[in-house]
Length: 355
Ligand code: NAD
Ligand code: MG
Image (cartoon, rainbow, N blue to C red; front, side, top):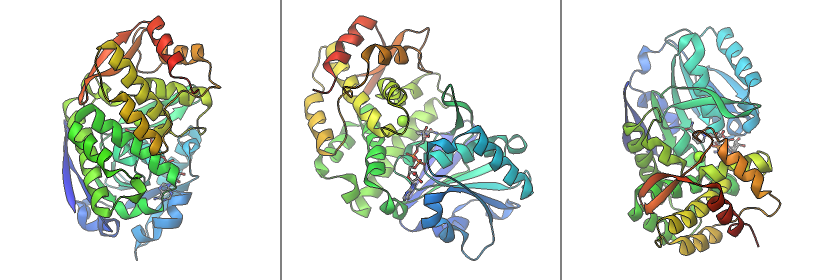
C-alpha cells in the first residue's frame, strides 16, 4: 500500500492506494472510534459489485442513487438528506462515499451541508476519481450548468482500492485515463513518457503499473491543491483541455461523450494552440497518434457548430469578463494562462474539426 498526504489549510489527510484495501477501511481511518456512526452513499452499479465488501458483518445504513450524472441533482440531494436525517446522523457521524465522481461529488456535498458539515471519506471506484476524490470540490448540477452548486469540503481520508477498477467498462477506463494524461502534461514530462512507453491501453496495466500511475497522478493533483486550495491561481492549470472540453460536452448534450473524451479533444486543441502561440514544437502530432491508438477522440465532432462552441467557451464558469482564456503549455509540464482573441480561436477550431 502507498500513502500520499494531501496538505490543505485545514490540515492534511491520507490517500491510501492499494489492492484489496477497501475491506480494511475501518483500520485505515485515523479516528475510527471517535465517530458515532457511518453512512454509505453509493450508486446502483457500484452497489452490485462492492457494497457488501464495505459493509462486512456490520449493519450500516446506506443510500443508493441511480448510476450516472443525473444523480448530481437537487432531487437526489434532497432524498439523500432525508435518508441521513431518518438515520439520525449527528455531528460526529461520518459519510462514506463509495463510487465514482458522481457519487463523490454528491456525497461530499451532502457531508459539507448536513448539520453545517460533517466528515466524509472517499472510497473511489473509477479511474476518473483519482482526480475527483482529491481536492475537496463537492457539488451538484443545476439545469443552468454543471457543478454550479457546491462547497469546498475536504475528505477525512481517501481509500483507493485498485481492485475496484477491474470491473469498469472500457469507456470509463478511457475517460479516467484522459485526466491522468492531463496531470502528466501539466506537471511531469517524465511521467508522460512513462505512460507513452507502456504502449497499451490502461485496462491492460498490471496492478503495479496501476498503482504507480495513480500515485503519480494523485501527487500532481495534491501538489496543485496544496498551493491553491480555493482556485485563485495555479489550480486553474487543472483546467488544461477543459475550456473546449466543457463546451463540447455541453453542445453535444451530457452523456454523448464522456468527460474524459471531451477533455482529450480539448487537450489536443490546447496543444495545437500552445504550439502556435509560443511558436514551438510540443509533441502534438506524436501525442495525437498515441491518443488515437488508445481510442480517445482527438478532433471536434463534425456535427458541432463552431460558433456555438466559441460562445460556450466565453461563458464558461472559469472565463473572465467573457474573454477567452486558455491554459496553454510553454513546454510539457509548464502551464500558463493566456488570453486568446476570438479570431485566433476560431481559426484553430476550424483546423480541429473531424475530417
Ligand atoms: P461516475 O461516478 O458516473 O461513474 C461512471 C460510471 O461507472 C457510472 O455508471 C458508475 O455507476 C459506474 N461505475 C463506477 N465504479 C464502477 C466500478 N468499479 N465498476 C463498474 N462500474 C462502475 O463518473 P466518473 O467518471 O467517476 O465521475 C464523473 C463526475 O466527476 C462528474 O460529475 C464530474 O463533474 C465529477 N468530477 C469532479 C471533480 C472534483 O474535483 N470534485 C473532478 C473531476 C470530475
Ligand atoms: Mg476534468
